Length: 369
Image 1 (cartoon, rainbow, N blue to C red):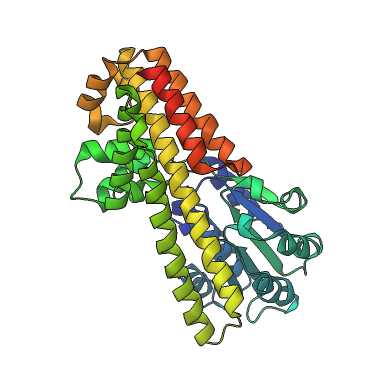
Image 2: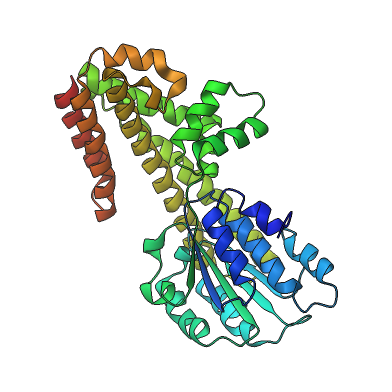
């Protein structure tokens, strides 16, 4: 394993590395790589698949090399990622369930990777059960999931779970510093903590739209402290989420239409539905991020008010936090952060987002102003 791609892919995931290293001796038929986005599941899955395909190959090094390419030209590695918010049912049936019956094109193994497995519809997950229970002896399935609640228990229970932890803030900070040489160290330090171990989220927060979202969240909290919620400051968060959703919907529709032109069988309805699902998913992600940024700002206010600046996440906004903290009680700020998180969880019950935000910020105004 020394110096191997699998070792590099799990550099900051000691628990997963030990489990996967042991699994190589006798790979199971099905795995569930479970953990937050950006924690390295994807790279680990590709490296693990490459090691499986190298065993028994006529040229192990060449088989490993081709399997590690992204996209991979190895005929026995099938990698399925959702084009939109969900996997197409027929794509799961055709490329995984039916294809798993075919013998390897070369070597002695076939590996099927389903990225964002929680994005499979229940119909697809139920159809996959038999393949998970009784796969051909040469088949190995790897499911990747960032949201365990989206997977049916019947699916998860048939897989050997490999757990991936959020990346430490120090690791994110190091990677961001390497990728964003033009970014101030204070902002990188702040974003590394705000991302909660998610490298993709950290990179988003360093883009213009991420910076704008942070600014909107701070303005919303400032309005509550100043007693100015009558101006509906929360609408800016909704507008940002809506715009992000529309951008992703348009991009997904274009990608699906290009695939249809290239010969992938998709009806106009499937393209439209897939694009809309992708847009809704992105809209929800951005809105939830806005909630979390509001909650973290309130948590930081409580920390500064209590004299604990060393635990602040928004390290690039300390002066602003100090100014606001002088106007609020630490306990009230902590309660405010709890209110924000409770409201965010309540959105899962399909309540009106605008009404929920309106109620939240007037409650915050009553608590903080």
